[in-house]
Every structure is written in C-alpha cells, then in structure tokens.
Length: 211
Image (tube, rainbow, N blue to C red; front, top):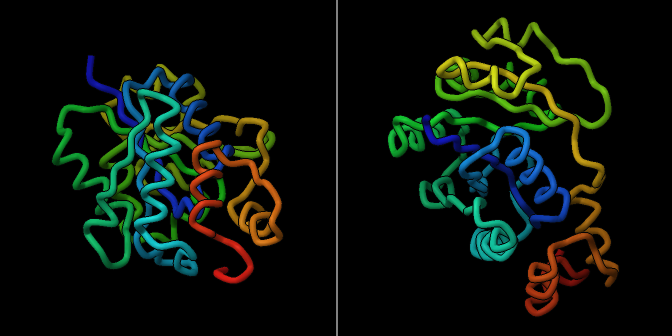
C-alpha cells in the first residue's frame, strides 16, 4: 500500500489549536501515515505574514511535537518568493513519487481554486480533502471543471491514483489566526498549543507594539 501523505499549507501566523484539530481530523479520517505542515513564504492573494518566517517555522515545530505523524516541511520558505501550491506539490511529488498525496484545503480556499495559478495541476498531482464549517454542500462544478472526482467515502478517495475530492466537517474549534492575534495584542491568552503560547510570550510576538 502506498504511503498516505497529506500536505497542509497556510500562513500559520500563528499556528493555533484550530490548525492542530484540523490536522488530527485529517490524520484519523484518512488513516494517514504523515501530515506535512507547509508554511507559506509570500502569499499570492493576501497580505504577507506579520511574524517572520523563522518565528513561524519555530512555532510550527513546537506545535508538531504533539503528534508523531505531523512534521514541518519548509519547502516554500526555502524556495523564497511567492508560494504557489501547484509548484509545491510538484516538488513534493518529486521527493515522494509513490506516495498517495492529499492536499488539505478549507472550503473558502477550495471555492477560490478557479483564481489560483494552475488549479488543474492540483488534481493531477494529489487528492483533495476539503474541510468545511457546518454542513456546506460540495461544489461539484469545480471538481468537474478541473478533472476531479467527488466521493463521500475516505477509502474510495485512494482507489484512484489522484484527483479525488472529499468533503469533511471541520472540528468544533472555531478559531482564526486573526482572532488569536487580536487577543494576544490585548495581552490575553489565546487558543494556542502550550509550547507555542510560551514561545509567543517569551519573544513578545503579536503584542500591541510589534503588531
């Protein structure tokens, strides 16, 4: 059986309990061997990160220590420039040619795929797991347009080599990085992994003077 590897990208500015809950959901749902947290270097469609790449990478490594199957893949930080998911998947595919790759996306990101660079390449390179808040319907048109096949069965996802799309409900931890940053700027605790919260406080990250 091919190794099952999930690619979970984002700004992670900072990584919070919601990110880790989603990662664990993917690990359990798809019976993954590994999940890679991939911090974005420079985004294409939003503002850059507040914290430096070095701080974000350290926070991810601290958060990843909670689960042996989670690791940090700094491929986009090392590449520099604007981060494009299709290019990242191509590079990971080169390293892991036999793996069953899964790209993890939130529903907002999935619905925005038509505006991404080379969206059809995503379906050529990997399966896609879409995590949604609430009981949102799958947009079948996006999958069909780019050659994907929607399924409701996690195991069915892996019967094809790539291009499968699965929708799953988001874990019940409703938190965003912007909300976390607002709480930290006000001197309040935030839903972060304990080691990450300690690191944030020790380094004065996201406080009112630096944000």
